[in-house]
Image (tube, rainbow, N blue to C red):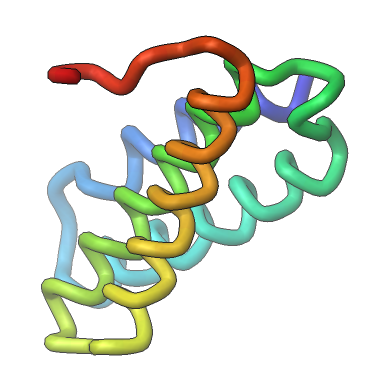
Length: 97
């Protein structure tokens, strides 16, 4: 399943390497997460979908922080909000709440 494959993409994104390599891996992770979200819907696998949304937010957040990129940070917030809405709709509680 594509959702599971994205986990290894994300972990490689922050591994050692040049700044350019880490940036490229983060961009690759964003693409993989987006693709996974298109293939598996919230209705099909709600918990995996929410986890992938969270990971997408983390990748965007990391990119936005590293580049002082407001657009990346805004994309991260939207991914986190989508995940949060999904959790509430499916009866899951956010961590720490």
